Length: 204
Image (cartoon, rainbow, N blue to C red; front, side, top):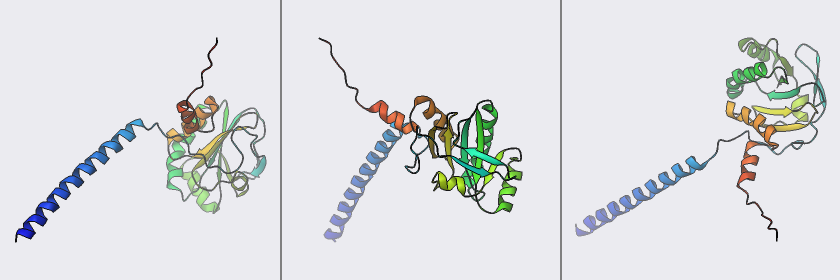
């Protein structure tokens, strides 16, 4: 009987100690969350490097008209890679349409997809993309080595790839433009550079 009482006491002590450890971990997680900066678009290290000339490719849009990617022109290009079977892609379409409307004077937004044309047409009707430049085919995705969706790439007027990455939110999309202004591949890269120690020179 005494052994049972002792084992119960030991178990309660162990449980209390475990509870304190969990509380400490929860506190540390909270501190980490408060220190984390907003995540920018996540760049996947495939294909051409950022701040290098973008791959040049020509593909037909859904109406059979040629669309040039990566060539110098009067406007920058935002390539949005999507799929009718990608729920996150669909959730971002209002934001993409808003960007296309607000920056129409300096930016051409091009939707790039692949797969069943009936599903593409249904998506186009549902999200009112009839007047948008919409390319269906594998050429562009293969050229830019797109593996996961939704993905976006920003090409400037000179045909230079300024930023690229997986985009899961409006904040990710905005970070592509922020990274372009900051001269960094991604917002994370810029923030990482800000945390690096700076060397100081002293004059004598």
